[in-house]
Image (cartoon, rainbow, N blue to C red):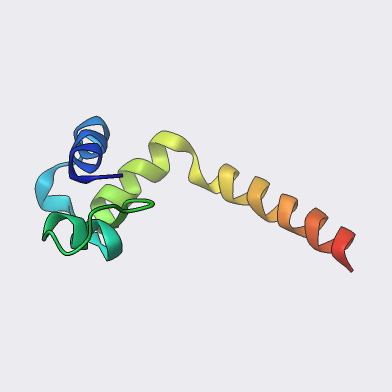
Length: 77
């Protein structure tokens, strides 16, 4: 993703600007130290995390992910 792609993604997320900051390669793209980033890493406040957790039921998503990992690991052993 280039800078425009990252900006579009941030717009779509619509997070309050005082509730997160950008890490890793995304930050380097915004400072013109890299041309592209593969993803967008954010550090978010506890308040924003709670809002997201409640909106998307992250507990259920985590349980599903852990179940999938157990199945994959069992098949690899």
